[in-house]
Length: 102
Image 1 (tube, rainbow, N blue to C red):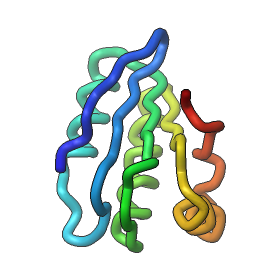
Image 2: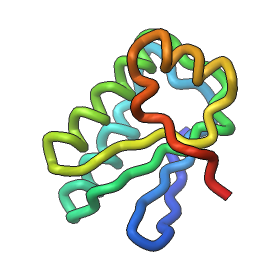
Image 3: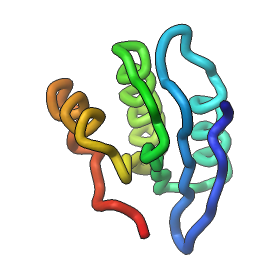
Image 4: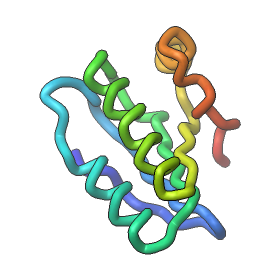
């Protein structure tokens, strides 16, 4: 399922739903790249409804975080459940975690 888009003040929020695992769909990468090309500098991935993630999905998160950093921006992950938070910590991606969004 493609990410849904929401735009609070000074941020772009992408809501991920379903699974992020191999084979990786390029829509997330393309969406983040478009936002960065338009001048966005803070992209937040809301993962509350993400049901599963594997190594390929974690790699995709690292890739889009690097895209944002290369463009002078930041990618953050919000509303991660315990399992996804633990995976992010285990892989060194916990730096992307932010407090839950309201």
